[in-house]
Length: 248
Ligand SMILES: Cc1cc2nc3c(=O)[nH]c(=O)nc-3n(C[C@H](O)[C@H](O)[C@H](O)COP(=O)(O)O)c2cc1C
Image (cartoon, rainbow, N blue to C red; front, side, top):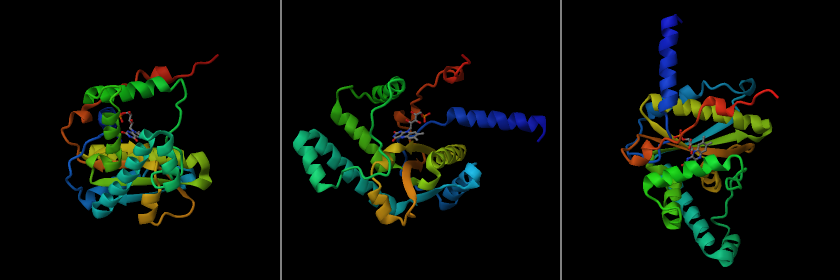
């Protein structure tokens, strides 16, 4: 590549990296299959440990996507009802089982103290933008529930990692996800990576023939972004220097 090409490539990539934001409200318009394939083909170029590509992908569209959204929302509603119901509610959930998280990884855990401020600021910023009061539990639950409707997106992607490659398959899946998100963004599509979609693995396993050694690590919604203000949310990052570890 010539110097001019490098400059143009760097400018384009930098722009894409800086303008990609999580999209949490989508138009219902379907994505043409060729466009979905183009994005998946780009993501396929992601590097991985010894080129093992230790992940598998389930792509839900149309009626399958709708069934999954209904199943996941049902579980979310049952889990929230149990939480509101105190000890008895939780007991009922334990006995009934449906609604109990059955994911391969725990998605609800205590945040480490040093990460908690960033998490809190990101959550509060989003709720503030939506006009949701801190103590308005019902409104927060309703917003959280949108995760399980894929925020209205026509495509839901579920990412599974090979257990045999341990943490490195998770690392590789993260690189794959970002590759997919950038390709989608470059092509006018919006995405939201969603750890929340790993809370319940049962619905996706009952529809897709997931190979034995694969574990559900994350989901992702993809579609055309709507004009909803939520899509203007830009949680800050701070300077790269803030992450640097200096020599003793
Ligand atoms: C692995 C991963 C899991 C995520 N899970 C969720 C999720 O469950 N729900 C959600 O609304 N956003 C989720 N996000 C989006 C993050 O909140 C978002 O990337 C972060 O706040 C930075 O904002 P930005 O993507 O707009 O730059 C996730 C992002 C990643 C990378």
